[in-house]
Amino acid sequence: MTGKVLLLNQDYSAIAVCSIPKAFVLLFLEKAEVIAQDQLNGIRTVRTVYPLPLVIKLQHYVRVPYKGISLTRQNVMRRDRNCCQYCGSTRNLTIDHLVPRSRGGETSWYNLITACSRCNSIKGDRTPEEVSMKPKSKPHKPSLVSFLRANIQEMDHVWLPYLGERVRA
Image 1 (tube, rainbow, N blue to C red):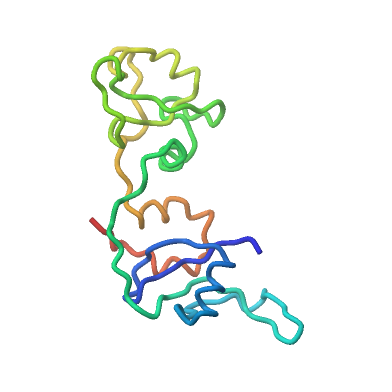
Image 2 (spheres, rainbow, N blue to C red):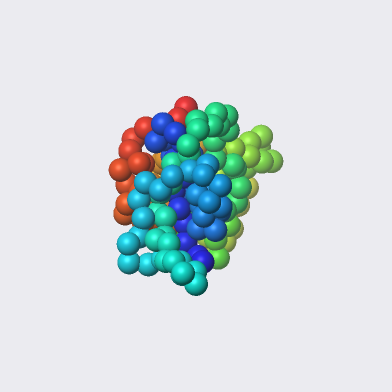
């Protein structure tokens, strides 16, 4: 069982993406209800066929302290759509500090971008302005909803109504 299910809080706000087995456990324990399901595909048991859930909603409101998207190498690359922010390459990707750490640059969402090893080597221990290399986009801290929407190829079209422009701050 591969695939992902959008998990909504009781107020229909998106709080997570979970696996199909996790969704079935929540449904079986009656902690969630199905909002959207795949009518064509399902999970067969000896006696029954259960439709695959695509979107589920928790029965009770869960207060989720918003901590934002974790600052990890994978998430920085995902934010930058797995391409070099200088030349657009998708090969040999690394993480680059716009203001080098040796010059007091922080490791934060606003100072990290994805760069190929060639561009990172050319830039070296200098700022992009010093080597006339302008990043394609300004680094930013993504919200959960914008992060999910940016990676739409991984999600089902049924999720779109639940991933409106409601952004948690």
